[in-house]
Amino acid sequence: MRYSNIPRGSVHDVHRRGHMHQSGYMAGVIFFLYRLKDVALYVTLFAVGHSVMLLAGVLGGIHANPHIVGAIIGLSVVYKALENIGAFKRVGMRIDSRAAVFAFGLAHGFDLATKLQELTMSPDGEPTVARQH
Image 1 (cartoon, helix red, strand yellow):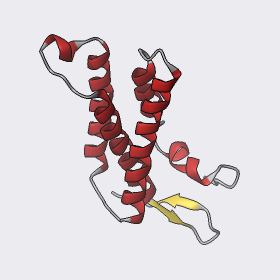
Image 2 (image 1 turned 135 degrees about the vertical axis):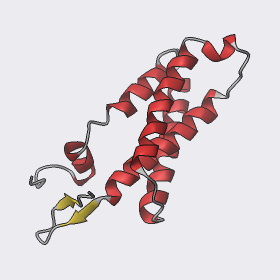
Image 3 (image 1 turned 90 degrees about the vertical axis):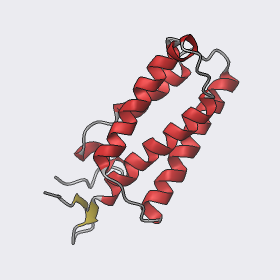
Image 4 (image 1 turned 60 degrees about the horizontal axis):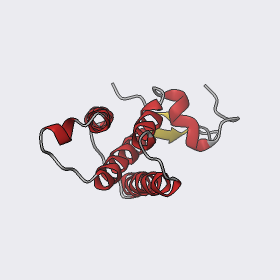
């Protein structure tokens, strides 16, 4: 598949499974926020965490099993759903939601880093995925 008409940052979304988990997670994060200031804070925390781990993973060469990272991503969505329905409060757990959003931003950024680490460049300068069997 040629990617010449696709921005380079979108290649992983075209090749791999859709990355709707980030949109779903962030929808869960902002669902109960009523002030724009709070929305901006939580989106910024997620974006900073995502960017830090993306840079650390790709530029720092940090590698991890993508299946484990994917499981953490899944848990982040489940966590947010449980938080939104008040499950943690019912059992007496108090988790700082800002810290959780930042931590899950790190996980989501590392997920993208693991995908980008699989890309190589073909002789014509197009990104391709190195198949691992």
